Image 1 (spheres, rainbow, N blue to C red):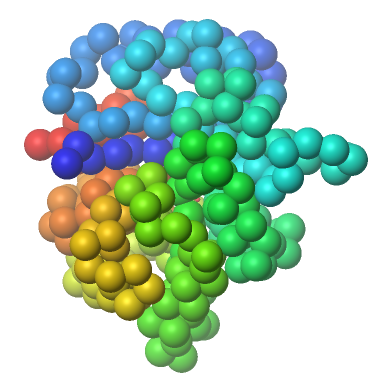
Image 2: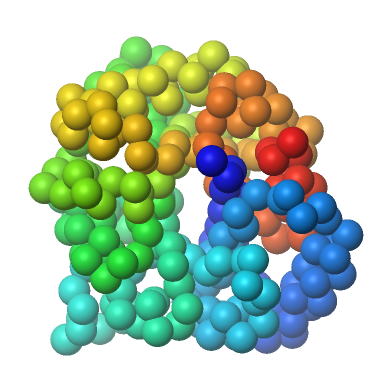
Length: 253
Ligand code: PGA
């Protein structure tokens, strides 16, 4: 299966000038990368989606960083899955640890968003992960098991091939501290086991599992290649097209 690399720009590219500069750099860099590069999914802030959609070439896919579960209506400030679709998105990141932490998103809300995204044929990239304290207290398996179970509750197993789960240890996001390959492998198995129990082996195997947290070209072997993960979610380094595309190249080797 082709590996995937997701760029999560977070709340960056704060002006049209910055965005256009990013386009310039990215276009220059991508012309030098091999054609066997991974599936590239860029997730800019909502306001840039249309411009990214016009600019992107066919081999670059578009995702959003969040959405609301309702299709339309009186929900001031929210973004609907239909809006994402019509802006060219195929993917949507859901349940990122920053949304759980700063915007108090809980598993129930994330579950509604997952179901709604699937209904509109958007591919959810569901983020799960434990905090530093939870890991120290040996709660990693119960926390992640619960996050997966709750977020995917009532999801039809026929939709599982459209789901990506990103293991993002909260202590690794933005910190430059990364887990060992073994730690990532353990969590990958735990997620698979949870999915087996919920949906049965045949269907559970269709879910792609990726890693996120301080990914760069120097640690890509440790966080993706060695643990046999299906791809990566890249935060800060996605703003640097040279580094981002280097990671894309290395994971497909
Ligand atoms: P980081 O962010 O690569 O900057 O650690 C990853 C993420 O939040 O998805």
